[in-house]
Length: 200
Image 1: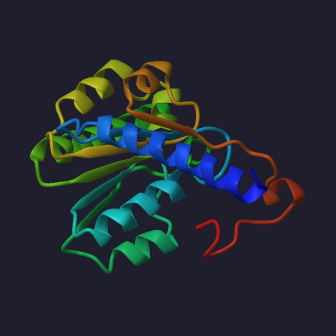
Image 2: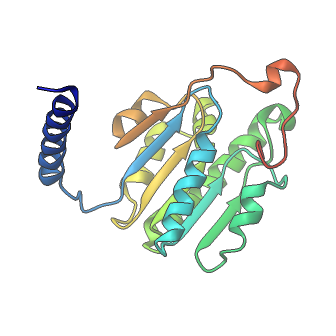
């Protein structure tokens, strides 16, 4: 058998295997829970990519930002062009080292999560993104069990993405998908400041 024929047979076997897996897969009848975590860049960016995908299908999206303050970002400016499909709440007051006030940070996180719970349970959204909520959990600004209860109470229509490094093990166990971004190299460590249109 020639190399080309061997390749063709191998691809046919892979195709058959993939078709079998696809045929056996089921629709869960509910939205999924996705966790984007890890020490590398791209966790929120990946979530925003999923938002673009959802908008392409005419879906409604809600975004609650837990840590990032009201600084202007490219993604916020872009998604503002879809007011009928996107609801955006920036409820954090900035990075934890900026506020330096734990009680204030806890109050902000609790208010943000209360808003998130309303959105998740409302049935109005196909996708809700809880941006940087893992940081609020990491610092114990929120209780992990309360967060999982909020996810369990979501409308069946609603999928949720939770971003931020150091995702709690309980959250990862509950989620349908967990993706970990790994840092290999970062320009900031070489003294390069964040770039508009690339980093924010």
